[in-house]
Image (cartoon, rainbow, N blue to C red; front, side):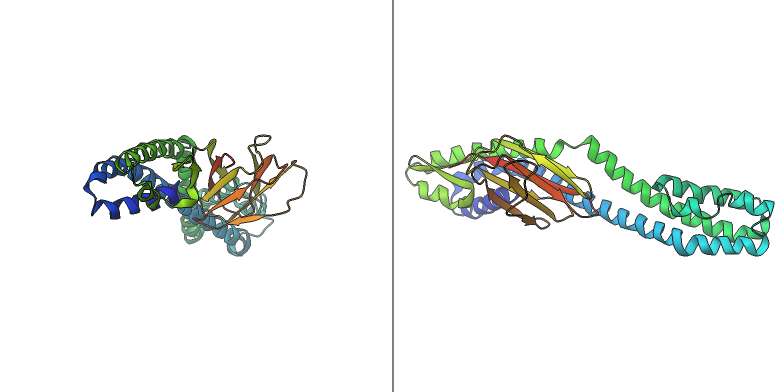
Length: 300
């Protein structure tokens, strides 16, 4: 939808400069297009910010589990030997809580250490360093979770805007047919032909059988339209996220893929369903969240 609508509205704008009759159609389409594109780009930005925060957290946790906790441990032992009560108060389980476990547990371990260090005036400088690091990693984690919560709450918004834009495109198409009813070739010039099909003597915008907006967790795969695909159907995939994805069709879920398609960032591609294939597999083999818009069109 992103590629089709952008190409079409650019052609309409150029045509409207010399053909005033289509300007009302253009003005009707623009609000739907702008709303879809604005939210689409927001999702792109959110995904990139999510990726940046994830990388920041992973870098900080790697630093924590290696050099930082070792430095903190040694600094504590300079004043309080490992067998002392003071050491047991500060690091009762040694370095382990900082090196293994879930994000939240490791972050909390840093805050607990900072709070415990407040009792020891001779370690005040270390306490400040530990607390500063704890807040840094907490801020990155909070930003990441904020994006996750917003995405979960607005997961269907992009699809709603896409459907509204599709309806507007059909309205414009009908208007163009009325204006150029004796010159249908002009209508063809206003569309990217790969999105059109022949019906009778004219060209019509294809009606998608199904539209999906799919989020893929890191290192995950999804089955799509299982049992619903038919020979020669066209599947349009648009990568709207921040991770390269792969896609392929299969006859059965246990089969091995014969042809694998790699979809780069912001790329769109079409897959023609081979004979006997009944489902689509979409994979995210990266460490980042992936987003893809899927459209299923009937066979010609």
